[in-house]
Image 1 (tube, chains in turn yellow, red):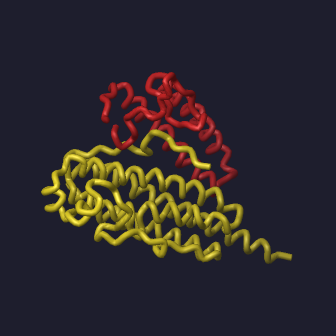
Image 2: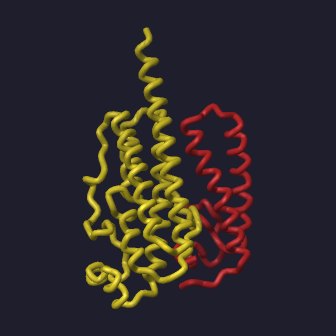
Image 3: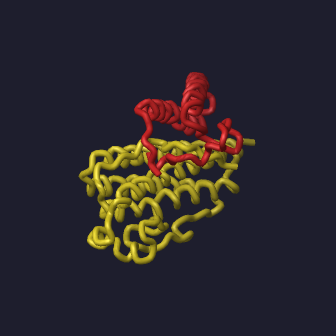
Length: 189
Length: 87
């Protein structure tokens, strides 16, 4: 069971209405290396991973939903005061035609979210390597997003998220070592 | 939709975010370092701090969680704004 908490993991402030930045940020909402993909990937892999790693996948998967909410909050705040004309100018005309200001799970280029972004191979080391790669790709995406923003508040929240990718990657690397150690031990008769 | 909240609410919320961040970080760390005694001690200390802060916030500003993880006021005050994206 999951329990929702009425609290963001880290404060999200925005200095101005900026629908174009929102368009780019959507990459981390419904994109291949975004927070939805991350949460679904880890929580789905839990069922077949060795017991020693289940807790880690559960906890990182859960934290990803908190990050998804932070991204949603940024997108919401950056677009809520935009006019139809401003949405259009920001390249969000096609989005507006279908969704108004509602959020939708697609990437920055408008491609809808797909389960093919994520894998569960059933081989523990393979799954963890995918997870490490996912964290590094998300970290890179956050860097590219930071490079495109001039809003100190947005940069602050994105920097927090970028750092979390680094920590998650580190924990997954440790999980690989735990598994290797375990597999090595089993070979000793 | 966006009710103006006192400075105190934002101060308490930020304190809770800080304390709960330590707990998230230690949770993940302990998932891969389950025998770090000092980290577990710190985890339990911060779990206590978090509980105290949550109680402080909930008494004044309403429940942070539901399904019975928080008490309710009368009338039912779980669905009262602001939600996190409205703060």
